[in-house]
Length: 108
Image (cartoon, rainbow, N blue to C red; front, top):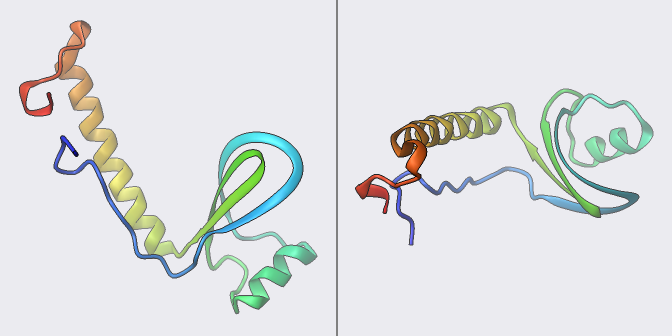
């Protein structure tokens, strides 16, 4: 059960996420403007009928697997607003908790 009224957000996105397997063993998160002009990226964009610079890619690498989610600029702005709100709320909550780590009653 969610304890905070803004603790969960869901997005309807234009593009489905994709998963690829690669040789590198990496654990990372990256955000990229889709501006690569290598043959592979150009091929992916053309299959989606996208121009270079049309989307932002979120990549999560876990071991040798990469999950990629393309976002339109509008979707990225919506996500950034949600992240800003969550960050502001968590910063305020952290300040309220102080050094004794006691949650305020409305969050407990």
